[in-house]
Image (tube, rainbow, N blue to C red):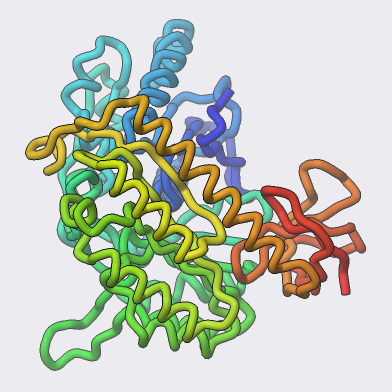
Length: 460
């Protein structure tokens, strides 16, 4: 069975299965990887390879990988061992690794005998059909060349969501930030933005197809920029977001992820004046210590980060803020840790993603800094951070009691067939009684109680 953080996709309507090879995919990691897998399935469809959710029917297995933390890679190695056992009973089965881990560990993946047949980096998916043919002859196929231009702008992704309500739209690729702990610039290449007209066409197609929400994706969406050359009409992220909201007023629009250094007042005012731009900003802090932030090469201080939090609170009414926190980074002291806790208190996050520092080979931190915080100290600090965020999240939900939210229905509650669930503009999950609504409908829900994970309410 797929792991909990893996996505497997159901075959979209319109695929024929006559005389076609079958592709099974697992996707790990971020939303960008999910979007990339949809591009891969589209490329395969155009080359008479159909998608199957059943691994036992597969002629080809692709695993789209993440390298952001060591434990993510370890889970993928475990899955590859499972695929190797399947391959023993199906000698013609082709197994491939694509994505960030393919880029970072290409030699190691190919060293393991009979483990994988092809290794493909994030910028080489157009070459998949050719590489599959090469792998089919018994040769190991590889292409991990990074590109300065590739955005897959002309490829219409095959949507793999189960409810046809929400979809991802990639607006840019790569990253130029080079945070000292992060492998993304090395595995995804230089930052490049996608032609806005191709983005609007994709959003328009989703709207016409009945989708009610899109999430604009980039490693740092705030740095999106098109037409920066003299004599051309330039489009920054605020412009892109506003035009999307105005042209498609029936769509809710989200985005991820923002970098604190680049989130401007112009963007905040754009969000505030457009009701269909969701009132939720994910703003990774990583640490509350200016000293640690400098070692991380984050490009802002504690004070500058909190100034951006204050700007969000003052410009956007009732905006939810989430974050990423890394604890136990190189040389982190107890005082640095306490500064992270106090920053969390001051920012009053609605929810957060929290991790222990995991050294990634090839990064500046791995080459220039010592991973010198003992594992037991990392674990203790992470426990403290998680407990604090639990209190902050409960405080946030308690403040929502009695409020009425416009909720986009996504489906039936996992716990009860008599209940539905959806999300508010603030990206909070809301559960409520089924009154005959279907996915894609809106409901006004008054919050009456909450659990650690959800708001619970009644239709108004």
